Amino acid sequence: MTSHVVVEADGGSRGNPGPAGYGAVVKDAATGDVLAERKESLGVVTNNVAEYRGLIAGLTAAAEVGASTVDVRMDSKLVVEQMSGRWKIKHPDMQPLAERAKELAAGFTRVKYEWIPRAENSHADRLANEAMDAATGKPAAGRPGAAKAGSDGKPQLPTRRPDRAAVAWTGAQGTPTRLLLLRHGQTEMSALRRYSGRGDVPLTELGRAQAAGAAKRLAATEGLVVDGEAVPIISSPLTRTKQTAQAVADALGGRVETHPGLIETDFGEWEGLTFAEAAERDPELHRSWLGDSSVPPPGGESFDVVHRRVRKARDELLAEHGGRTLVLVSHVTPIKTLLRMGLDAGPQLLFRLHLDLASLSIVEFYPDGNASVRLVNDTSHLA
Image 1 (cartoon, rainbow, N blue to C red):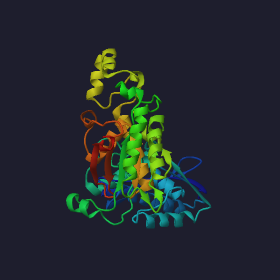
Image 2: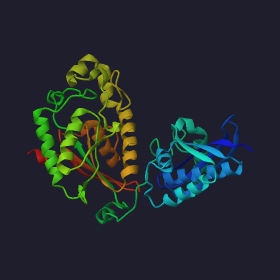
Image 3: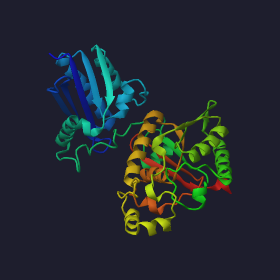
């Protein structure tokens, strides 16, 4: 009998929802010895349901080996945050599973929840994939853990009154989370058409006027103030986006929050250069960068890295605000990336889509995994 154990748990689905399974392992906290393993195929469910089922199996196994204190380690930020009491549990499919996990946790002296990167959860991840292999008859493509959507699993959103027009035309089910994507106004860097990533430059006078025009347009938009309270207004942490977001907050009577995942691409040594200057400075690298999203600028980040960062930010925002409307004030690349997700398009979209300063785009993400792009690069408020 071991009093202190570590439970590592994971779950995933191939399709979200799709053929799913979970894995859980119980280890002696002092020695790391494996005390119990659990895995099971679940039929067709979502990532998050599978993750909760993995947690339940792990806690059950910990009780069976006689544990009194448990450290739960999972790579699902959603489950960890919800079980820690920091995030609300809104989705009806997860509420009973979370209650069951809480009942099991109450039987121990202490249970602590910790988020870990997927690479540190490889044992439970392997068991979950073995369960999914058994369900589908074939392994997932690519690296271990490929069955999960996103680094933390794709959050499932609360299901309320369906958008009937969307159901009729797209088959999407449930109430979507609506993202109003506003690009910041003009800065000196954007006026000169220079790469402007992490450089923290303010809006110009014209940029402030553009932000005011966008704010006036949003203030006249139905549904952005509910029962006297403005919808969440979430900005990149850079000055140009915060100034634009503050204009919106002032117009709606809300407040600005920031999220680091919405920050612009780090252009590294190309920061401040024009397109032509960067191409002249690093001709071969610049050509490669234009055709391969995995290639970073010198000292910067690739578009693939940006995509993973923005996807994680989106998943966190959907998990926290599922079924609501959000105003996100960001930059060209993060907004294009969110539209790319909505269109289920490849990275070439980044080079073929134009977004003007202070432009408004809209994308909706549904709880069943569907999405709908409703508006792209609207600047009618600037006329």
